[in-house]
Amino acid sequence: MTTAPVRPTDRYTVISADCHAGADLLDYRPYLERRHHEAFDAWAADFVNPYQDLMAPEAERNWDSGRRLAELEADGIVAEVVFPNTVPPFFPSGSLTAPAPTAGEFELRWAGLRAHNRWLADFCALAPGRRAGVVQILLGDVEAAVAEVRWAKEAGLTGGILLPGAPPGSGVPELHSGVYDPLWAVCEELDVPVNHHAGSASPPLGDEPAARAVFMVETTWFSHRALWHLIFGGAFRRHPGLRLVLTEQGSGWIPGVLDMLEYYHGRLVAAAAGKGQTAEAKFGAGLAESMGKGPRAVWQENCFVGASFMRPHEAALRERIGLDKIMWGSDYPHDEGTYPYTREGLRIAYAGLPPAEIAAMAGGNAARVYGFDLGLLAPIAARTGPTVAELEEPLKEPPADATSPAFAPGGSVRVW
Image (cartoon, rainbow, N blue to C red; front, side, top):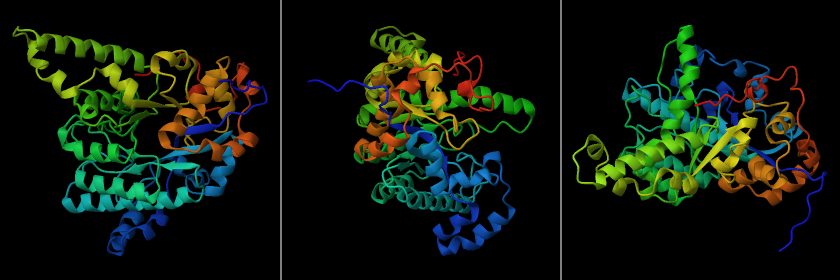
């Protein structure tokens, strides 16, 4: 079998595995059941926007489909995985893990998430084949979450679910718990990716300057926990077709964490297999049978990483992470995203790499995981995608007004 040579003028099909969108506040109202309208009006009247990127006029990027398509195309991106951004109705903050004080409050929050999901289905339908919308769920009602997954599949949302975290104090079982098996089962049955995005798993820390600093240090670590919870909890043994995507958590940490998980797995399983009564034997009792394959094998078969604004040191680890696992993301429209310098961001990460590897990380892997049709996207990429020649040239100086960490000095620091 022969393949056509790569020409300098050939263009890459770039799919961002990490973008965000949401409705303008009052536009959620029509997606709520009428019985919730009065409560929504009261909530909206007191709502205070917590995020700078939801201030006008930049906020329109979240819901203005035409503007969004134009800006992404100008940036070289032809399709996107769409995570939520605006605060859903009835939530006190952007966190899906904020405890609901009453059953009535919990019901309202579910109604708010359903409103967002239904708005998202309409939003994605405005650009067929170019948006994979990620559905929001709550963990406090697994049966309702399963029903929402089935609805999302029928509604044509292909981005999968956003798995909330279970931080200390959340009041929901830890992610390793078997209580979530019906959720893993329906995601496996319907081939729905399970996405765990940074920021949704951290416990509340307060508003002091020190608390904000601690949040920045710890937030990715708390997000990583989903990986070892599901591995050691045996979710992938019971549901071998389950797919987990870890997004906007960096990617340079993965080889080291897999080494660490393999180390503990080996110690605990080996100790439990012996006849001694050591502490490790007790900790490892039943582990091999409950979890099945080891951590590295699970990563290779079931896991992927949404590597937002990837850095050079992460690209150097691509073979240890897995070339077929990495999905580049722009994080549009966030301030830390690469817009409007995505081409420069791709150059700083990928310059000098083989074009086939760049094509996989910049779009091919995301197409496979989220079901994008590369044939449908090819004509758009042919006029808007970055060329092979562009990405071959190393970036000498970052844009002066770039705000993404992709361009920050000291990019070799590995984020946990």
